[in-house]
Length: 115
Length: 109
Image (cartoon, rainbow over all chains, first blue to last red; front, side, top):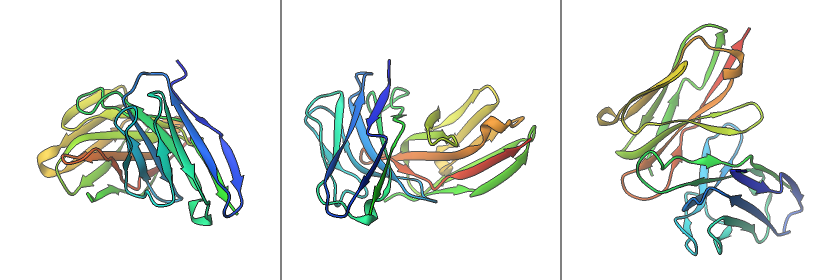
């Protein structure tokens, strides 16, 4: 099992450019999450999904969009990148809500720089 | 939203020493997890512990849900324990997780 994978690992964008980050998991998890991590801060939830075809806003959703067309994939889009979106982005997944299976597994992260 | 505070923010230990990390949260939760972020950035789940006590080798954790705090104990620390330790909670209402700002641990040989 590869677990949770993220593509790409690094990316540099110019202000106003767009891009999509891909998260894939092979653990048949229902829940998937996108977080951003900024220096000296914990992780903040951007968007999440509780199943195929569903998405919901997290703590810091502005400037991002997401889609979950397939259960194993969760895409994070930036339509018009801004320097404030320079961050490390982590994807996570978990089986179901509630109980010991409600444990998040994280991908390796994507380091994004917006110039 | 719920407030999650971790202490201390930074900790430097000699190899072999013990330590206690604390996580306070401001509302009732149905999920609490401890994570270790290693120096390469990878986040590893240590414990799922919304209440009670668990042990895994040199690490153990205790959550007192009624008093809204959790403790992570590291015994006989090793240099490989270095990194940042995060707690994350999910309030009883909603599906979102909230992370604390972490405790940065450095273990020196």
